[in-house]
Figure 1 (tube, rainbow, N blue to C red):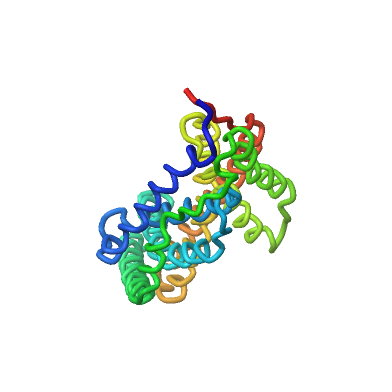
Figure 2: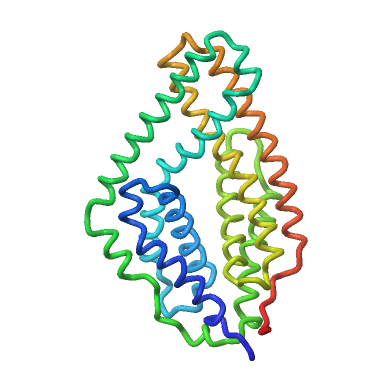
Length: 283
């Protein structure tokens, strides 16, 4: 049996479309892991629609834009959730516990993270209050498959899957230094996510490549989370200066972790781009 591009990609698109379509009540209720699951599904759909856009008659630019809007609405609460867990873990480090006023500072940090997340949840719910999400859900999954979707998978889809990895390799090699580096690193992480989701959509035959790119995105994600954490700590340094030794200790540790993650992430990019291109064949 020769698999077409549609045979391979359609189940992935249907799975994550179903997650997005059913996500709104869970997201609005802040059910456990709901925001994370919805955001991941949204990102995977948007990425796959872009990477494999020849498989549909429409390029689905509007649909991808709407998926980006939904992911953006979910981002701030989720970012604070991740960063909050990270900073909570760092509070147990001996360098923090040794700082003057560590216990009081820890409570201040928890209160700030809790308040900030409550504020972002209100903003998120306001953003999602209209009919925009219903229109997005109604457009999922896209079904306007093109003739290219019937082309054997190894003749088209496998080649398309390799494109984001090529871009990631080029971006990693050209990373600037200085003030432009954080923005460039953020763009690289987005490209590595596209590489991850492209091979993830191919299923078990691309498991090695998908696992490699997953390690890349999770490692580079620590560097990105570091920027959010530093913003929280900068606010605390202004609002609660009496605990400055604790904020400084946390800031140093976050910076160390982010730098280490960037170094490790770039090495993982180099490894991932040495793997052979994913191929999908019938069992």
